[in-house]
Image 1: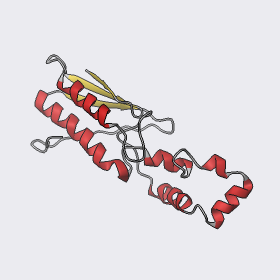
Image 2 (image 1 turned 30 degrees about the horizontal axis):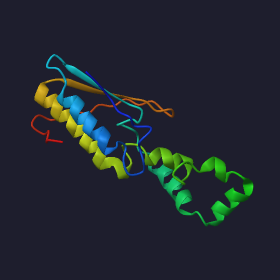
Image 3 (image 1 turned 90 degrees about the vertical axis):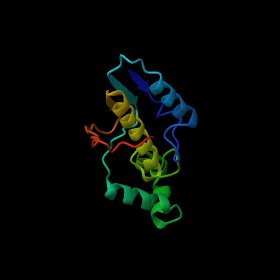
Length: 152
């Protein structure tokens, strides 16, 4: 089975998926034919993504200091337009804020993983997240301990 998530056009600082997309995911998963033994979840935003606290701290500092001397220097040099992204923060911060691993989205990520784990446990099938990102490639695995899956 194939579940495709629109994680590019509708994501915000507050949500990766809209409520309508969440409803669609639940509907798709619930309507999987009994013959399905493997579900592939496609998303352009990786569900597993390395956390880089040093980069996050530096980007947060630059984003939070809009009126600082650093921002003034960037403004004078003309670099500010190349550094700040669509959320009004340092460009790399945009990338960090709109990933599943961002603290803003940790509950949403957990909900997605639990949904897929509960489907896998209930139906005895395998779930693979196939996600892409322009900046790097990673591989990871979620493992579920027997009896540890709670409903999503």
